[in-house]
Length: 173
Image (cartoon, rainbow, N blue to C red; front, side, top):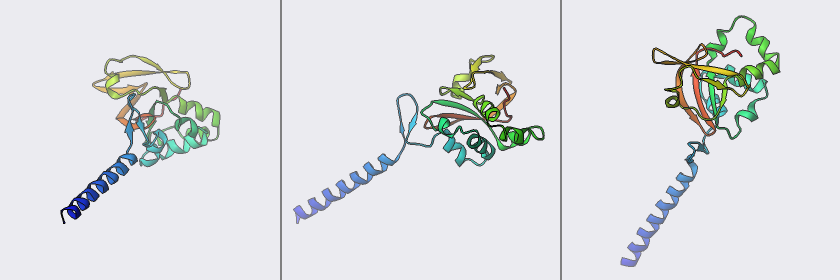
């Protein structure tokens, strides 16, 4: 009887260990460089959110899907649907019909490397290179962070290949 109880306890312990090992294998892993391995990339995060439909459509139209699913790390300053809607009449349609110009505008929203909100504290007035090769300016006004004239409204949305900061205006190079 003692052997039977022992076998059943060992069996339970082994089962629990196997279940835990399986669950751990499903969860994202944070690598030494701060990346999430196995989690959604910046484009997947944008797809899962409710307020980036226009941005995702633009990325697809500009053939930048593969680039934003790359290893990175990237920092994406993501304009909301409202930011795109605030563009002057005809501008969005014109961009969507001109793939090269659209790609340039989108690449102007992406910086190489993972820049977290805490990294920006001492960067007032700093000029940062975008993937387009043009510079954006980081300004801090009344405790709020601005990229050029766009206010950063949400920070540090992490992805497996970088980070997203939400902005209220479409940046134009």
